[in-house]
Length: 283
Image 1: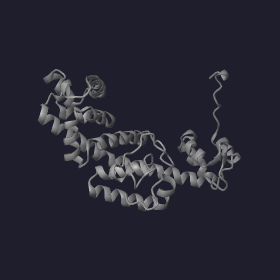
Image 2: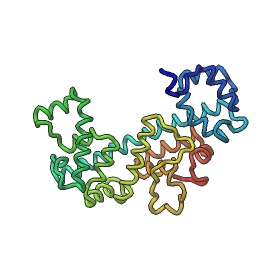
Image 3: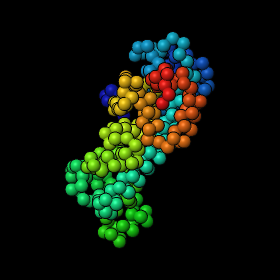
Image 4: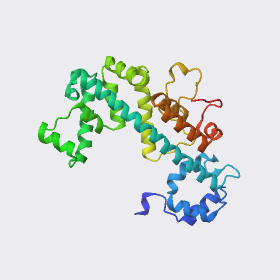
């Protein structure tokens, strides 16, 4: 690569460790640090390094590499746990949509633009759906509908191929009267909260899917706490808000197992200090 690009040069693992030491990070176990950096890209860890610095180029005194590893592993654990809870929530919304919309408007509901708020958004979701199934040409469900129904799909098939983001957008594009029924009968909340929560959770799902950091992160999409707003004021952009949504959208047994496990593995003090949970939280 030509030098005039101005890009930083690549450096070896040993040089990476020297750079971290020069910035005040204590490398308490060099062999362990060496192995960790061989398996985990320095750039991926960079966000954690900067969270532990008191200015742009120097670590908080006595910060060691073992702490970086611990924080990184906690984030990995939390991402996996959150991801596992988002799956049944996504499936439930798809099921409620398919049942209500299919029974009310028929199997061709997806193509009936008049039952939605925006025809343009319908087209956008349709294009996303067609792009998704283009990767599934050998799927017998896809080939069957192309051969038997000229490439038209019933609503209950389509929802299964929509991403979390697109099923959230599809629900948002429904008429308010349909949103209300799905939200109340499916989740026991109003449609405004369900739209907001699924937007926030779709962002979280993308963060988890792309191995994004959670440690001391403030999220761009604020959580709406509804009646609990006064209790959890200033927690709208925290991981606690995501947990709040997950609880209210999940099966109570799944939630209890998930939350107890997180509290045992991560610890309540860590959740309060590093993930901005309220000090007296009972999600």
